[in-house]
Amino acid sequence: MPHARIDLHKVHEPRLAEYSKAILDGMVRGFDMPEDDLFQTFRLHEPGELFYSSTFPNQQRDDIIFVELVAQIGYTDEQKQAAMSAIADGLAALGVKRDNVLCVTLEVNGAAWYAAESRNP
Image (tube, rainbow, N blue to C red; front, side):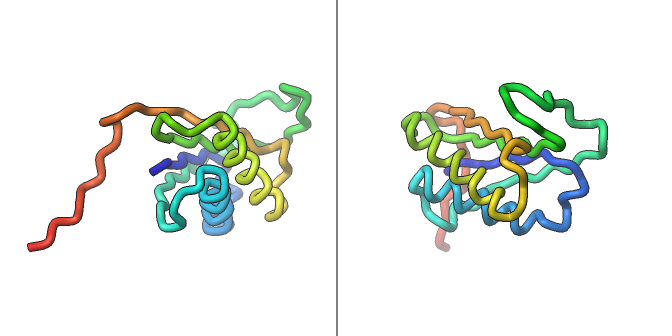
């Protein structure tokens, strides 16, 4: 059950639903997870609240979208790279410059997750 936290400038607010779908699609493809495993948090920022290098490493950024994936330990490096690449592909298809996307996967272990189980009366 990976969770995505996305930080971006407020100017992107009208496109959040599109970005959400592109990010979920990338996670589904890369992590081979169910399509209804949707848990995302978007945090919108005013100009001057996000700091980033416009050139590191060999990029040409004029904006930034931080995508942080929190996932259970166990995904391979290939799966993590596939998910992050697929997310960048999906956002690029929406017109977001690839250099403006920065993805990272954070891994958590074991009982670091809680989601209530369905209880039937």
